[in-house]
Image (cartoon, rainbow, N blue to C red; front, side, top):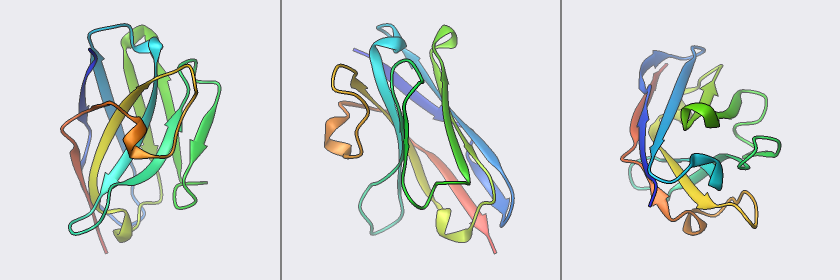
Length: 125
C-alpha cells in the first residue's frame, strides 16, 4: 500500500508561484498514476491535474492549463505540481492521490485509492 505526503504549500501574493511535492512510500511509485486535487471550504474536491506512471501523459483542468505543470520523478518517488500566476481563487487545500495505472490517469477523485493529508495554499489579493 502506497502512502503519500504533500508539502510546499503556503501563503503567497496573487501572481506568485509555488511548487508542491508529493512523496510516496511503500510500493514502487512508478506503478501508480498520480493526480492533484484541491478542496476549498464548503466545496467538493476538485481535479487539478493528473499524470501517467511514465510521466508521458498529462491531463489538466481548464483552470490549471497554461499556469500549472504536473511532473514526477520516479527515481525519487516524488510527484510535483508547479503553480504559476496564482490567483485568490486557487486558495484551497491541495491533495495528491495515487491510482493503479493500467487504465491511465483519471479526473474523478473516486478512482484514486490513496491520498495524502493535504497542504494548504493561500493566495492573497
